[in-house]
Image (cartoon, rainbow, N blue to C red; front, top):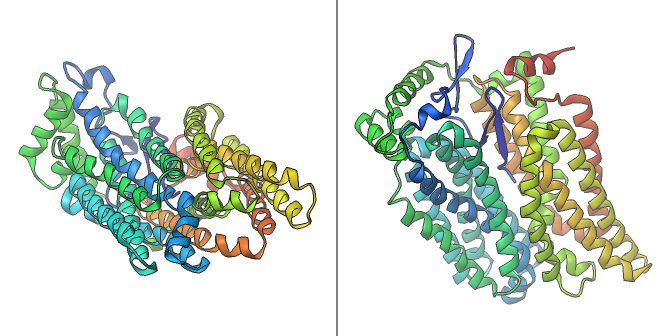
Length: 490
């Protein structure tokens, strides 16, 4: 998906990259990238409490869970929705893929919304879009209302994709930011896995109603947590800024230094020149742009949103007695492997992890493609379901361990801070566009040739390995200047 882990190279803090067109976690001043919390971790929490930080994070990741629920909805419901509403293959493909169009628009507008109404306000607006969308899906009797509902939920999660990680990064103390921001991706995967599992048990209309639960928890929870102090300072609400920071750090915490650093950060941020899309094509940035965009294209064109959106039907076509069983297995693999990938991110390095991940997605797609080829030739029919299930489970395991997160990490590290906002906007747009293309064409490709579909995805996996080996630098442990030098060297 369009959201993954991002790690700032300067001080090893994990953040989640969204559409960062308004502000960055760090600023550059006099040749040094600084944070408003660069002091020792024990100083910033001296006498303080992190209880409100944890509560605020829990509330925010309800939106991450909602994100996953929306993404995972179509996989277990395809056959039931098509049968009940008499949808054609094209109509259901539109329903499945229109989520990504809504998310694309949500991601593009999310920065402005979060800047105007605040992080909490943006989450409330997003939750309302998702609630409206789920109710439209529940009450739909044809493709029109169904698509409107799916588009509405897509818009909501597009805004969530930016505002949730930004909110968490802005409220968390430095020593907890890595842990807390990682929860965003974990809850997205958990939400989709839960949708896969319970969607295999309950009717599709009831599954739509379960999507309301995290939205309601979010709306209620937002009444009890403070707004981002950083946003309050940015819009000039100084009194509210002090109150919010005090509430997050605890009544006995010394917030003087942190408050002063936030104010300095805001002042410096306002002095930075705005980069434009034209700046990305300058010779000193073009290689970074090519790497970032190419990784997002390859991430999508290995087929993740096609395979993920229509898992149950794919297993059924392979001859598995119950497509729902395969979907449950798929869901159970995602979460633990995503956790493993998060721990490997800094141990293995970016390039080895994504190359191993892409090699694994090649193997998974090749096995799945082989199973459909054997089915078409009426050969070794007993092995067809085994190869299909095994191939897809291998695929999602290897995708989750690296391909889902690493491109976003690399993207956050290869762009200098002065263009990171506009470059991030371009990359997010490319990613969601690729997600739409793959999710919309998947069913048509499967109708054309099931084996050919997976062989195409496996070919893109091979291209990824070759591209990373040739063009993508290792960014682990390097400064921004070192990364830029390695990218631009002849």
